Image (tube, rainbow, N blue to C red):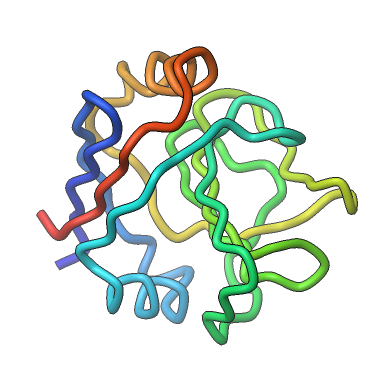
Amino acid sequence: MDKLKITAGKFTFGAKFETANAPKTVAKFRSLLPYNEKIIHVRWSGEGCWIPLGDLDLGLGYENHTSYPAPGQFILYPGGISETEILLAYGGVHFASKMGQLAGNHFITITEGLENLYTLGRTVLWEGAQSIRFELA
C-alpha cells in the first residue's frame, strides 16, 4: 500500500511513500489522495519544482526533514516562516525561500521513471506550470 503512481506533465513515475521515516506526513498526504495540482519551478532552491500551498495548515511538524533532497525525492514543508509547500528535486537542491534555508519532510521517493525527471524539470522551467496527479498504484 506504499506504492504510488505520479503523473506529471506527459510523464508517469512509480514512487513509494517513506512511511517508516515520515509516518505522520505520509498519513496526512494519503488522506488527500487522489491529489491533483499544478507544479511550477522553484525560485530559490535550485533544480526543483514545487506546489505552493499558501497558508494551508496540515497540522504537521518536522519528521525526516532535510534541506538537501536528492533527485526524485518529494519533501513537504509544513509551514512556519514561509508558506506550506511540496517540493520535488530533479537536480541539485538547497531548499530555501526568501526567508532563508528551510527543511521539509521527505515523504515520497520516485522509484520508476527517473530517466524522465530532469526533462520534466526543464519542461516546467521553460514551458511553465504542469499538471501533477498522485494516486495509489
